[in-house]
Length: 155
Image (cartoon, rainbow, N blue to C red):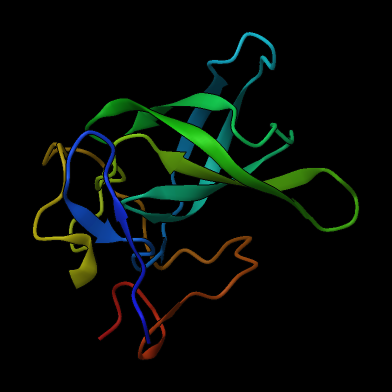
């Protein structure tokens, strides 16, 4: 399997294009930084990795919209952009919104991240509350690693 690499903006280092995504549910607030497409909404992450997250929202922001994520454990807030937006179900009540972080890192509070995330969490306070990775409420997707389905916390 070929690994795609991308260059980080502002430097010449390369990182894997897709790092392992893990199920990690934390409440966050997503606020548009684009005056032409204003919105602010509380949502919940469904999957995360150092490059971004999938968050469930009740609105469908336009792809490319700059956003700020608030309420992250230990770091408070970061900026990102909307990478994609897919309807969850046929009723149009919820959307799975893919957000790409402007500065990749473990901003989610994952204390034992997968090996391809790097060696240490980024800017995480040790006293930050951590979500229960075994919580499966409203989880519509499976995640996979090279060895098959990935279950954080299972050995």
